[in-house]
Image 1 (cartoon, one colour):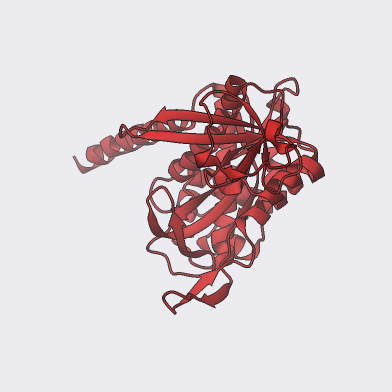
Image 2 (cartoon, helix red, strand yellow):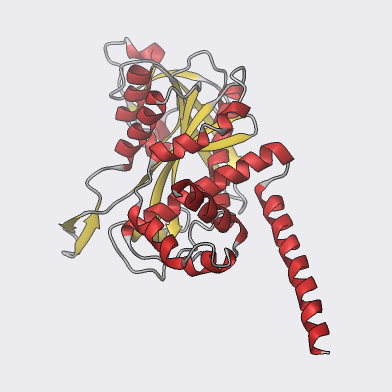
Length: 356
């Protein structure tokens, strides 16, 4: 029956458009299951990345091993401003909004190949320890484990599951020495990562010189769209650096630094591969808008975790339909809502006939 509950609940997250509740699913099932059964299912199970992988790999049969696959890792905040605060639903700094928001911070690992995007692992940030801020003298919460540690565990999870891919892609938040060393030495894989402008670099030509020194990336004479062979402070293997200059939507100029341990890539090829990182942003939008991931009023930690897991299953179902029907998630869900509206329209006509 466990598999049935998983199917019922994940399907419900796709078709419902308000708040995902146990009572709502019970009403939809017309008494086939009760709201107490749904509540117990969400409260007692303990789903994690292993369970997500077991479901996602069913869709991997659609992926051709001849295509170049990439693993993309990124985090997002699932905003829940009106839900009771706990160790996972707490305050996080949102860099996009430039302020703290209340919600659940989730780190995801996604496999992208051509037009297929499948989440194969996830980690929830848990702020389970307190510390006193030296500036404000206030007690604050933090996680005992960093997001970079979660990053490496997600990649290890992919390794143990024998996931096939060629590159790891991530933004500058995950461009740490430990992550680069882990991908290069432990996994033996290639990476393309964003790089912060305050990192210390030295060109490969200067590296062997006696008086060679490192300088901050933002102060280096780096020409855009040209690959440079460089050394990064603390990294003992050569890297390729590319600078991209672009115009933001508001007219301002933005600069993106990319670093890779693949020395064979030219500027265009490196940037083209890195652009695939945007797929995980599309995934973040879809789980929020099409899989009801933020629309559960539950406040218990176990229930919140299991609801998130079911939303990721719902996303995988939509991705499977996308492949078969050649329609995006938004179009598929809109089709369902049109059908629902048509059924409601017909029912309203019947009700009006009965009144007459």
